[in-house]
Length: 381
Ligand SMILES: Cc1cc2nc3c(=O)[nH]c(=O)nc-3n(C[C@H](O)[C@H](O)[C@H](O)COP(=O)(O)OP(=O)(O)OC[C@H]3O[C@@H](n4cnc5c(N)ncnc54)[C@H](O)[C@@H]3O)c2cc1C
Image (cartoon, rainbow, N blue to C red; front, side, top):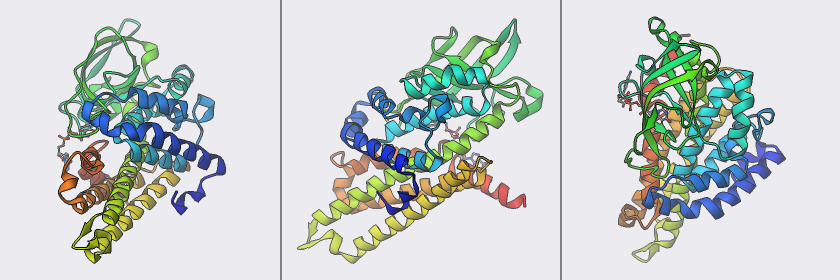
């Protein structure tokens, strides 16, 4: 464990140590096979549920682990270092439970969060639509009053866990004239009539963490409305602030695995009678990878620290996600270069890590959108 993590409490360090052992013994060894088979990471998530990870983003009063935002960052990093697909499915689950925690009523929190935190009950977060990705306020899914509840109609796409989840937090327009202030969130349990998920998308990476298109034509009771009508967009943006720190954690975990693999390979590979790790060009590559990775980790720690203070931290979250996702791509690409031709084969994990990382610059707001957020904050003051 890097010195940086000594800032965690003793209890949190123990939580992370136990998790690290579980990931090393039971999750990381399955990462290559999961990538090849593209089977959803059900068993890996069940293993993480035993370790308290399905509720690591939730306070103890709602059945969660109650760890700090800093420990959560470290924990997601550990999972991602072992298997990117598992970390992605896990953090998509956090988006769903965070939405209930942030926007839900006391009754919804009591009914859903303890189950989602302690048993293997998976959530999904459905914001993106075929014509509304970077600009979710332009969504077309509508929810209209119908009898004692709501009629929800529309389509979502690229929803992680969407076809396998036990519940989905779905965002829909309830007041078309109010633009983002007319968006509301709804809790949709699995098996709701009128809900259908397509087959998993055939993605470049994260093959064990499936994404789905969803078709919705459902009647929901009034109790399905998460919090109040018109609050959905605000809830989604707060959830994404948390989510972006978790994306940064995924990037850092996978990039650390790439750096470790490159370091080991450079020590073993002998070219012209000399180990790669003795060549200055390779040593400088390794140094730059470690340098940038540490910068990304410190920015993520700053965002996590701001998260723990309980106020909005959108700029810090955007910076952490942008930096970590761009650094992680650079680190993985350099690690692959150090592996030479072998890095381009499926015989070494670096090929999978490189593919798994590529989405990080796109989902939960692309790098361009993070720059827009940062510039918006800069120019507002
Ligand atoms: C594996 C995976 C998992 C996902 N999981 C989820 C999930 O669980 N829940 C969910 O709701 N969504 C999810 N998504 C969707 C994801 O968040 C969107 O794909 C992402 O927000 C980008 O939207 P888009 O694909 O529609 O791209 P577009 O919005 O069409 O953007 C295309 C390009 O244009 C750029 N662009 C757009 N607007 C601007 C601008 N104003 N200035 C400069 N450049 C701009 C973008 O940066 C991008 O490069 C997932 C996607 C994938 C692939």
